[in-house]
Amino acid sequence: MTQALPCFFLPHGAGPCFFMDWEPTDTWQSLARCLRELGEGLRASTRALLVVSAHWEEPVFTLNTAPRPGLLFDYYGFPPSTYQLSWPAPGAPELAGQVAELLAQQGIAHASTPLRGLDHGVFIPLMLAFPQADIPVLQLSLHGDLDPQAHLALGQALAPLRHEGVVIIGSGMSYHNMRRFRLQGGPADPDSLDFDAWLTQSLALPAAQRHQRLTNWLAAPGARAAHPREEHLMPLHVVAGAALEDPGERIFAQNLMASAQSAYQFGGYS
Image (cartoon, rainbow, N blue to C red):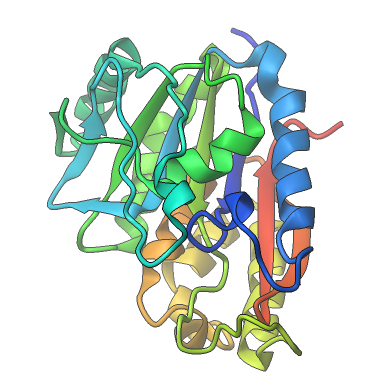
């Protein structure tokens, strides 16, 4: 058995933020650099990418089996050029079959579709991390009930893939309160700081304690203010489940749009 690849929770930014003018101009530069460096470090060892995005929910966990998935421009009101972006990465239907078997073994209900494109939670960050678009990508949906335990269990079922050259990525935001974001920045929302500190501490704990905290994440300081709806947090639960015993380490932290935003890596530390 090969060494397990790391898995990641990444903030995917605001719409197509990396590919348009912004004010201040350097708002997204640090996160963009983090994504590029992450991809450079993973490229040689990665057979495929399995991505769970905040922007796809279904009644059951659903796999995108398209051999050549298009892009789903599911953002609104941005410059016309951002609807012309291209990232023609191949799909991973064979990996989808393997994932379906793993889910079936654990009694996890699932479905598949060959019709859906990759949403911006997938292609926007991965255009930076893997600009060559030559590594197969499989997108897996969230469950529409957004149940924490179900998403942790999904991740645990996916964990064997880490030994087979598959990098598991959760794409969301560690803080996602649209009403409190400020385009011009400013001091970070205190609730975002409190929740970010709790999250960083929780992810570094042994797996059993980490999972207990993530299951009861609403008890965290600033939790509901940080996530009025938790679809941008649940990709982290999937990744934390897939990490098994590997602790989480924060690999990026910045005040973005007046919120504390963090990225995390599980396993594979240098």
